[in-house]
Image (tube, rainbow, N blue to C red; front, side, top):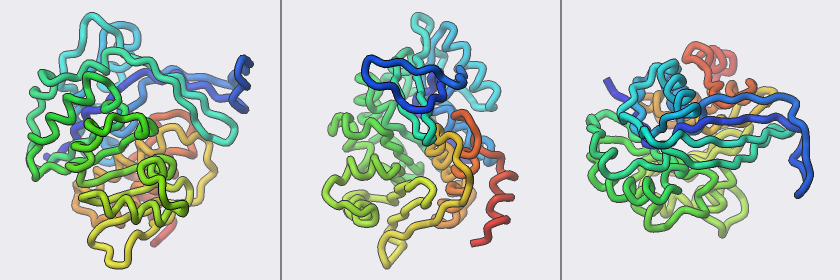
Length: 310
């Protein structure tokens, strides 16, 4: 069976909902909060709920946060490849979600930042697998160079999806370059796309410029507007696959839901634009629910697509 194989990070999210970010030196009281596993888990949960087998090949720790991570992976029915780190806990992320549903992150790195060459050698990829790489993993001084070197050994039959993350502007070009060059799908949000191609101003031009430099498909998520798609199979240039009208509650994890469902749909053989539309539907459902791991089931996504025929 085909699988999504993730070399990303799973950390603990400390999510706090606030009216607005405080001014420097100020304080604000959260209206609610949650402690849950997040990070790369959200993409894996989305793919698993859409029917795809998932393997977590990243690293994780031992301790109270590591316990949360291990339990969440087991609950999500994700195969765990690495034995874990026994002398360090998993890291955590403080996620502030304001009244506009925008999220702001501050992350403390733990055992997930210790994915080295030895750990990557444990991964045995199948021809029909999809390898999912996140910029959060590439940002670590151990993981980044190890993945950038290892990516050259990934068989051509394996689809590689890269989500460079909000950290894209800080990534070492010597790390990001080889992974981008191998990526069959480059998936970003609008902010990240503008950081990667700072010349043009309107988003369609940004996508066009990115596509000219990328070897594969370029996807740029534009919030509720939908997702721009640039691919050599589209003779008239980038197209916008529209989003779905929903009342957004929390955008935390929306891009992860999009990525996981996209991979599941592509793996089933759905045409590119159909797969992107399905991913848009899943992301729309995810933002209508509070919390990070809110990707819908396959049946829920099917229902929203049926309610809004293309």
